[in-house]
Length: 490
Length: 120
Image (cartoon, rainbow over all chains, first blue to last red):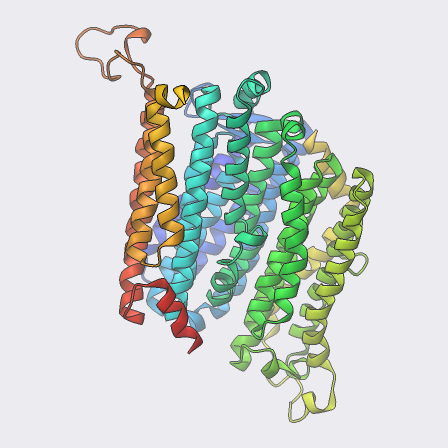
């Protein structure tokens, strides 16, 4: 057994151990240093692990020297390794950005706790991604939920507390449903390991059709609440818009994605195509996904606050991912996973840039951010590239996933979905382009604005520039990435 | 109907789950919501532990002689639910702490009143 195989476990351990070192240290500079160093080292480990998995194929890693049905297992395939790299990279960029600006949003005394929560959050999300054991996933989900509530409430304003409570109640609802789903699966199969459950379930699903159907629906709704599936998204705009910008970026780009990935793992790993086709439950996901794509954008048009616009845009973008899952074809799921990657790098950049605008001008509403392009040209320029990707301009990842989703829906025979995708793109343009156009152009908008008067120093924008570069890279290298994902799905 | 009566543990736990779920969704009082959340979690614990019980067998604790695998109930669900209880306790504690802060901030723990306050 190669030492590289144990890197996923080392990644989680490094994150959790360094997290609990932070409250012992008083000096905030050292805390930030520990946070950066731990995340960088973890990213390097994830990169080496991805390279290893790419060369040698997927492997199972047992934890605690008990073999599979009794002990906990990690399953590291190409997708898991890619997600490990993506999560650690995006988290590193967000932490790098937050180092310069976090004092402006939260109290000095809370900084140690904030970085503690971020490290625990990333560790638990990676646990959800790597683990092959359903109950272990559940525990990581709960740890992640509490930590993400913590990163919202750390700002300690009245509306934060309200948003956090709403988020906590909805999440508890979701995790209660997930636990019940696990209970059903355990009572039918007697296993908690995904591979073993699948092997048993394929043999016996015709004996307990109702119980299997109920457990599928419990998982879809439970994880749908947590990953903002359309009618269950109402906690998201409050939570994501009131949190500090760096937390919003983590919540929107990573936290939701881990739960979607778990849903993909459960639907296609635990149940498998035969059972899903037998009950035709994927249509629910498909319809809710398409509704979310349209309604999320419609809600976003009516928002006045820039962070709420981006938060509702997240609801719409999650719709694309659910659409890909709901198509039920190999291509559809690969595009859903590709969209997870593209959306994670784009949305984190957008949230950080919106945070930078709010921080420098002190205004949150769109009306007061007109003419921002003259005061902060680089910030709005980067924002425009992200917005173009969301709208779907060629080469950028947003376009690639829309294009392939259309192809996948033609292949699946649902041509009506192309209309939904086109409509959703147009609606995206309706709410993103006014931000950019009113920012750069218009006589009355630019009146009295001094060129570059409020721009952030270049070094503070470097992490966002890296995110935008990686976004463009994801777009250019999309063919290779999608091939790799579909290889991993086999 | 007979199936429901034979599996009365499961039936009871599903009814409890429904009660907890309804309280969590429908009540406006935050304390009641948290109680509903606890009832829901407890229902899942009951369900799991009932699944692990084999009638007439001992708890999986070895006193004196080891009776062999057949002598004990399935210990896995009980062990899982220990973790589940820890998780439930921590979320409850966190939710209660948030409720205290909400009361300090808004002077009320009725969710509909709090939502109205923002629109004023």
